[in-house]
Length: 504
Image 1 (cartoon, rainbow, N blue to C red):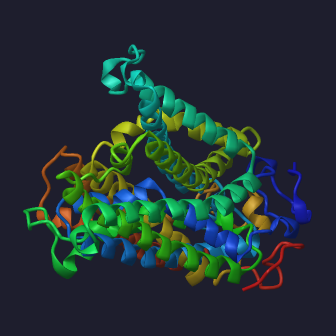
Image 2: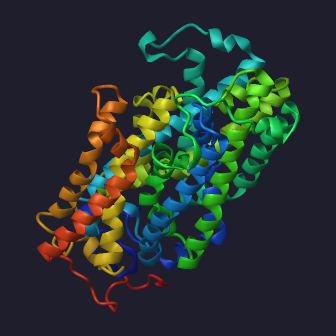
């Protein structure tokens, strides 16, 4: 039985639906500027601001905090561009691409790992946007903070906060269910507005603190301060890489719509590093300025903006934060898990059903707890999931470029008995490489959760979790596949699907 497929592709219905099939040439409408706008829209968001501001709040210099973010994004741009190549060349999404290395059924493991992380991010971003709306309404109606409790106390969430969270959740859901063109529109036209909001916040801090000099005075050295060149390494660098380590995997979900390899590579290179550098600098500088302005460091921009000016200023600021959060949340945290869940059971779970699953899990993960403080956010959440996803990136990149020389049999990616079936649909070499890549970081993760005490060696390994996992998994995978001798490479003439534009 075959699913209805473009390009005369013979696809097993149990491995394909309309959302997982390769896109055809008519759907490749994303230009260089659309790809750049995608990253501008995703990067200008509250977690980007807090990535650097939280480090400053913990005693880092602003140079070290921003340096770790800039270097981390230059590094993560490399796997993003590499993994994007397959999406643009073959028109396939992330879950389908992973079938080449993990097997047609084994691909569900990395797809679900990515999906679960995205559900957590979806919840965090929705909580941030909802809280911004709550603060906006609190200015106009203070009584919203004193509404009768409807949730049990252990959830740690007031009624007003919960209602605003669910309202923003519904807005995200409505836009995501409208499909990729709505997402493209949101990213393209929302990005310039978001830049203006960030620059306005920086200008306010400049004026109120008395100039750039007072804004950038570093805090006194403390026991937590990471000084000098070492500040851009270790946990700070790993958290910066892991921040977009999710999109480094699932970027084919977007690059499949790019017009050419040039559009996806140049567009992303223009959009990601510079935007992250700018907005993280704003976060670090403004956080430093709050000491001068308010006498205390305020790393959370929602809390900060609720204290700026009168009601009109707060309303405009909170509206800007809500839009910033919306553009990131839809693109980065809905598309990938929706495709990932669809990949598990294509005949039963469509993209829209996957969106609903993502949204529901995002609530159940209680994101207000994940985002509770800087330590939990950076050293547990970011580095923790980096330990899971770094190995997946290592396996995918070495498989596609080193072993297969970027040649895939696209039709076989949709067949249960094709060359990517391996052993009953699972490539056990990839599974072993994934486990071995994750394993060294488990003690450090348990230490970060304060479940056990770990040695300085284990903590040091965990500080580099994404890099350690990437390197180990890549090495084990290459050696394992060479030993197994199970690397089928189609000829250049048969690799692309008929009707799909190929440009290397």
